Image 1 (tube, rainbow, N blue to C red):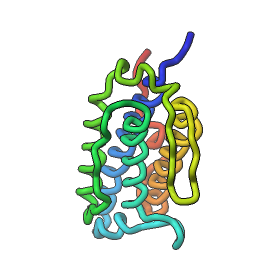
Image 2: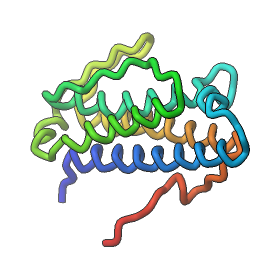
Image 3: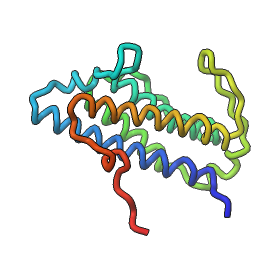
Image 4: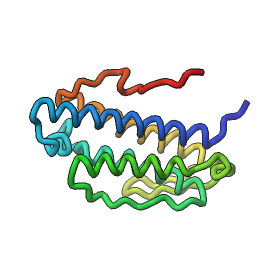
Length: 171
């Protein structure tokens, strides 16, 4: 049995983004309970040379929506990285989810063999759609999702492995 490119990507991205939305909710509740300004979470980072939480969320959004744009004929929406508040980050996550929910399996029918050229500074490479998704987009998505989780946890937000995995659908 083969697995479609759609199945390898869209449900994975949607699950991760919904997990992220729940993590951000827990962060907001933690900040309210402990009288912590949301700006401190927005700007929190694990190391001086790493992006803050806001940058992690922007990369999660960009990686997932741009994966669709790069592997299909669908134009991914452009979200400028200009969020100034925690609430704007939450809105960006919601808009990314809403976009991905419009993508249908037929939209990605030929995306596995589509050529994807990446030119991100020092990273310049050409992939097939499947190779791009499996060796770049999905690992990059989870790197930033894990880092966002780690930032929130490092800031005292009570999240654990089950929060990162999220709920499972009954089979």
